[in-house]
Length: 314
Image (cartoon, rainbow, N blue to C red; front, side):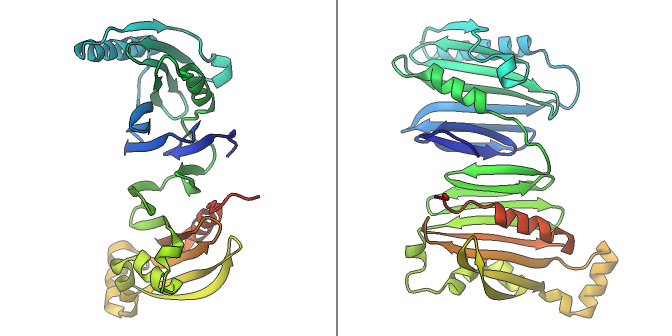
């Protein structure tokens, strides 16, 4: 995605925006119905975004802004901090962001610029806020974020992007688990009993020291997957890197009685295992894109694997 120098691109549950590259995503919680993102710089709050799904009814933005600012004022005054609030400051225009918005600012021991809006397409009510100190370019930060912010994706795919890991996941597959920690980022998406998983591990030079890529693959896939599927692989080029194509069959599918019970209960065959694993020398990381899927999901998994940006193209 396009971003200017010194910026990072963030994508989460259909929400996308650009932020300064030295801000860290320290909290991402909730789901598509109610969620929250928080970015900090050296432990200092810089940006937070909240969203709530409004299933029916009309959203009156002026009332929502009034309620939000009253709550904010009460919190700051309880902390013994005097606060000044201004509404409709026009930091961005409706024409610029192509949506009906209300913006505001507040001044206390810190300065905050905020924007609230409601999306008629995805039925989400959102509020974004950027915070800093008076001597900092808070207004410029806020303007850059607000102008780049999108609350839902178009088409059949959503862009996910955190800590330099960027990929596309199919809409309709809900994220059921995420792990974001030093050396490991992993996402698990589900649709019914089927799963798509994407992981990034590093540094590869440490993880593969004295170890073959095949051995690391067993560790990355995990005990449960290895015990469930008979998995075979072949070496193949992926993203211009040497990697492994993984193909597996549920072990229970070899038992006619288990197959009979499966057909009786679900009418479907057992999920099959498919995936890719490769080492990127440029980023010094290892990537996995795997799934326990039905045959009709193979193109989705392949698209997901090919969408991964494992290193910046020169």
